Image (tube, rainbow, N blue to C red):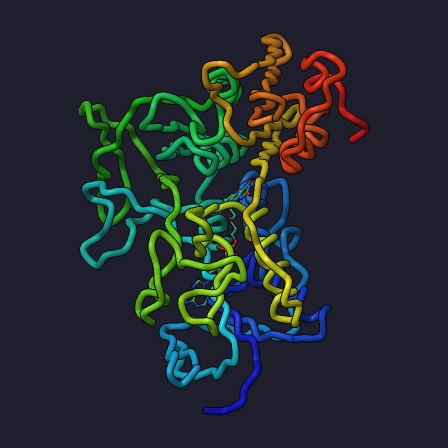
Amino acid sequence: MTSNTRVVVIGAGLAGVRLARRLGELGTPALLVGEEEHPPYNRVLLAEVLAGRYAPEVIALPAPAELVRARVTGIDRGRRSVLCADGTEIAYGTLVLATGSNPVLPPLRGLFTPDRVLPEGVHAFRTLNDCLSLSRAVRPGVRAVVIGGGLLGVSAARALAVRGAQVVLAQQSERLMERQLDPGASALVLRHLRELGVEVHTECRVRDVRCLGGAVRSVELADGYALDADLVVLACGVRPRVGLAEAAGLAVRKGVLVDDELRTSDPRVRAIGDCAQHDGNVYGLAAPALEQADVLAESLAGNTAARYTGTRSLTRLTLAGPGSPFDLAAFGETDPRPGDDVVQLADATRGTYRKVVVRDDRLVGGVLVGELGTVGALARAWEGAEPLPDEGPLLHLLTNDGGS
Ligand SMILES: Cc1cc2nc3c(=O)[nH]c(=O)nc-3n(C[C@H](O)[C@H](O)[C@H](O)COP(=O)(O)OP(=O)(O)OC[C@H]3O[C@@H](n4cnc5c(N)ncnc54)[C@H](O)[C@@H]3O)c2cc1C
């Protein structure tokens, strides 16, 4: 066994790049191994690239010093080394898994060609490559079907509509972005998409993908109705990318299990970002990935008090396009329990909707659509979990920006 102290990070996404940068600043450089062919970039902004608002270079992350482009295919914990697809072997002292998520591919008939690849015209929406190939295929009048009406599907549908495609969004449940939004806010997002010309079908299950000569031609719904399609975007959620960890015998449930020091079941292997599961949570969001990276950098640089105790993060989405941008933010519990106080302001003409849920003297959740002036103050009140001040009516929470 060598006395190698090198930190090797698998995955050059948001979490891995942030970790490498922070470690560099703290004087403990790390080696980053990433498989994607593009320089590291901010995944959260991919829809803006698809919408044609940003060039791919604009979303690049500050380049980490030591970056190797390779796909890691195995971890040998006994030898403390990782094996790459090109045959190279990289020794580590500490290994960090920052492998992110994979898109969920729904169980649709015809989704794969006989050689197990997606048919031409069918795209996931996870990487810059997905985004660039979608971008090349979209042009005014192209018929696009987006499968899934969560944050990803809504962003993709909007971006494609802005580019002039005829978009149909098929959402299996009864409303859009149901994980983040309450029914009132979902209804505004639906209206906004319809105003952009997107045809939205809720409670609509896609059953089949029909192809001709290896290219998609239509998708068939559970009721037998067929939608013509030149393009299909799969936006059916994500799943933590845990294959390497599982094969290496690390403890994995939904994600790679980590403690407050972001250690896996092997103390020499840590995990952060979408692939990690901390205290029962797999976040799948940018803010927790970055916070975990910051805590881990401190810990690896020798701060023995550094602990990650969870993230109370706000989901924020800015859908820019023609006209004014459409902003929304949501946090915590947006559906009240009996006995909670709810303050709500809705303006149908302006397309704005604001609501907060207060339990006892604490803010437990909220959703803002179209009017985000108070988001900073609300986020602070929620993230700090402090009792709300007793002066003034609760309506102040929605109308007073607290100087933010
Ligand atoms: C289109 C889109 C929009 C989004 N919008 C938002 C948003 O508005 N707000 C929000 O909070 N979050 C959003 N997210 C989610 C956010 O992007 C993720 O939570 C975040 O990127 C997680 O960072 P990560 O570093 O854990 O994973 P990733 O950014 O996915 O990075 C993981 C990297 O590891 C690489 N990798 C994996 N396995 C290997 C291997 N074996 N060898 C080498 N490299 C490997 C992958 O190729 C990838 O580059 C969005 C995601 C997408 C796709």
